[in-house]
Image (spheres, rainbow, N blue to C red):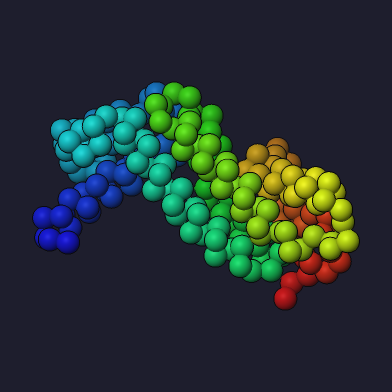
Amino acid sequence: MSTRADAAHVTGERIVDAMLVRLRDTPYERIRLDDVAADAGVTVQTVLRRFDNKPGLMNTTVERELGRIIAAREAAARAGAADTIQALVAHYENYGALILKTYSEAPLVPGLPEIAARGREYHVDWCRRAFADHLAPEVDDDTRRRRLAQIVAMCDATTWRVLRFDGSLSPNQVEVALIELLTPLLRSGALARG
């Protein structure tokens, strides 16, 4: 990249970072481009030139974070089942509230429902891949499909929120609770730490 392209990339990342900070704590409808621009140290015109409008900035922000989530999740899926659960809880401590907020606000932003749907599809596929080898080998196809669906539900951000906030559990307690929920579905010893 040229020096100019490098500077433009850094500016774009600053703007997306500023949007992400706002997005974590502010309802989408109340986020103002003036505030995002000020936080990023640029003008609103710079934001508009780079992202066209607020939905464009929102979609770019969510796309970037989805890429980061996928990278972290792929690394976690290569670990054993217990380590995968530990990494999943750590992931939700960082992204869980933002994921749930994004799903709830997706209908407000053109283009965001499609990104959210891709995120859901990825979660389902990741859960299946991360745990498929840990299912008891003697189960029939219907039982296997049902157990994988149960794993998807147990590993969902909503389940994390219920355990973490409605249940007032610490992150370590959430990890134990998920292991307890998953143990009957997996082959003996699959959740032992290696």
